[in-house]
Image (cartoon, rainbow, N blue to C red; front, top):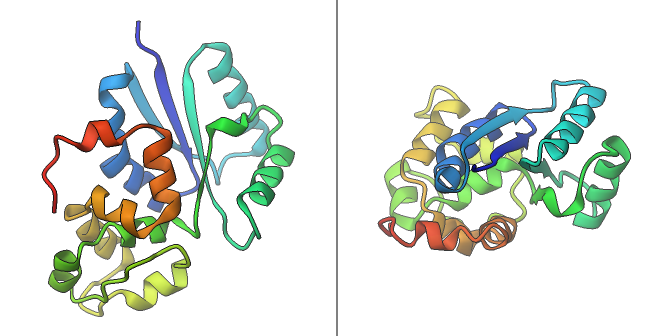
Length: 183
């Protein structure tokens, strides 16, 4: 019997990204995959949930933005403080914020099509930077995000964002995407 995978992410932008880009890459490995936005859930409930996932012998990935912390280690220390049932090897730190992963997936062609700057590296991209890069032709940042996801290239994102590359390598996603068309 296959295990279940729970991907705990901060908010709705993360839910969209992981639902569209990441979840399909894990489908063959798990019986089911559920994405949960934990930022709006009380810490005690999240902690109890992590404990129950472990007790039921299922897997989870806990995703958090590094935000303004100095290092991944510092961010993990904060998470350990907040969630005593969290396991270090299950934590994925997004640098800087999920918007940097969205933008990393834009190939030069996709950036040209959307009328945005083609960035060679998105490691230092914050939400505010992402919002400023968004063309005025979009009614909202959510519309812009959906457009990015339509042409998202995992291969390009790996080259443009170190934390995304770490995620892909850590979870051995490269094997899964080798069959996908390159953009």
